[in-house]
Length: 375
Ligand SMILES: Cc1ncc(COP(=O)(O)O)c(C=O)c1O
Image: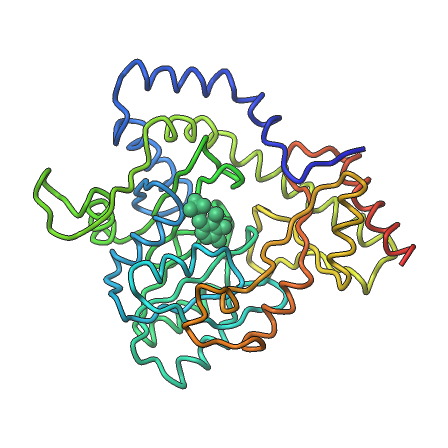
């Protein structure tokens, strides 16, 4: 039995007719940029996330970039984030000339460790303007503690919720807790479009207005530019597709959670305790399981074994950002963030998409168990 890491085709089959019809309507209207689908999707995502405003942009990466600009982060400012995330989080900081400053993660949630952040700021908060907590794999970071620290040091909080649309945190949802939130609609995300897309969420009218201005070359009135912004608009076709998908997002999230629970209980019964750990969801949090990530010591051997058995898996992420070639100039050394470095060697994402069948999950668990029996 082959099990793919992700099967977008079976989702597409279910929405194909409706999505293509909505695309046709956009083409017939000949209104491709910032039309009624983008406006409607912005209202729908704002409502979904529990934020007052949402601003569609060209990608999740651009959402972070524009959010940083809207928050007033300038070249030379410092922005704190985690080294255990997708590159875009820190890449966006660098692209505006600001300096990424890393702090280590919590070993169980893989999200930024508030105690490590506080320790860093206590030592020196000079030049630090913002923090970007990343809600990795589908679970929110410890936002209460982070917001408290941010308030103390007067920092903007930009949630990187690219992997976590709809994730619950003490009655709130990802993207509505910090000053701004950033969503990605990259095809592999829980809400993915037919290309690139992203969105900024916020409860702050000024930040919303500034983000809207920055996505159209810093212009409020056409051909008059108050600031240098970007060309970063979510297009109508993508928004139309996303609106079709958004209606199904809750049921897909339920499917992912069901699959995660099934994995949890099968792994618990598989007598491989001690060699494998399953995701830990913090009290007060609900995960939307963009990824179901296990942790094992012989990760690379297990991954090769699964691949040989026709089971897809992936490593998010194999090299922490402080060790990336492009960030050499930041001066971090190997060993600077041991929790992230260890996680990078041990994490493995398994298939978790909503259409996954119980028999496929059982097969994945049995194959993993057989690897450890042989070892
Ligand atoms: C944590 C995180 N941040 C940012 C991004 C960037 O989003 P995009 O690929 O839409 O630019 C992604 C997704 O790729 C992500 O997973």
